[in-house]
Image (cartoon, rainbow, N blue to C red):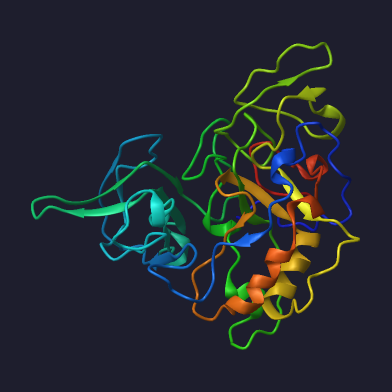
Length: 326
């Protein structure tokens, strides 16, 4: 965890017609949906660390898949968006993430628990959490991906937490920022994805279809290849799990220092990974008061048209593993 901790700057462009972001979205700017100003709730996606001894409580899932019906969620676990918001609107996706530390000697192992549209409910008789989907990664020392075709708290079946950009990796432990090194692709969204995925994606909630060289429609909601192994034509593009990098000839915006500089370097070396439907160009990080919002705002000068899809198929060790060849 996370998938693809490998530099992609020298890998080939993905030439599959499924690979580019869909043309109507290319004019969108990078939009950092995280920062330091709190607004009316966490500015970004927070996560809570709990001990391996944290008590489980009941969890009910009312829309999509649920890996767990009990989990180590205390009532104060912070959801994405304000505590008083609904599932949509200013509450957004209400991702609610728990990192459960390992026990003595690594047993039980460190676990990651994630909800989509998580909400704490207390009706005085039954204290519980509800969500619309959830997923658990039961051993974070493992590179195992979810089963092919299985979503998570995101449409693309990837974990949220390890793909968020954090202040500590972008800047180090102190403020003001001294640019650090981000060694993973950063989670982002598009308004719509196509109805296929590529490794390390595992699922999709997309539209459109692709055809093979014979003109036959490739079954939707399935995995497709990249580059020459990809489809021959597509009615839409942008598959779940696709990684895009900032083109080498694109310059960083003026005044892009500190965390902005670290993130732009990551755009070139590790890219951004399409993880979910959402606002086009939405770049996702953690909630942290140390972020400099004025510096982060420089990222908005970058357009999605400045990015290119990367063929990462040469990095696959096993299709069911997020490990990348070194």
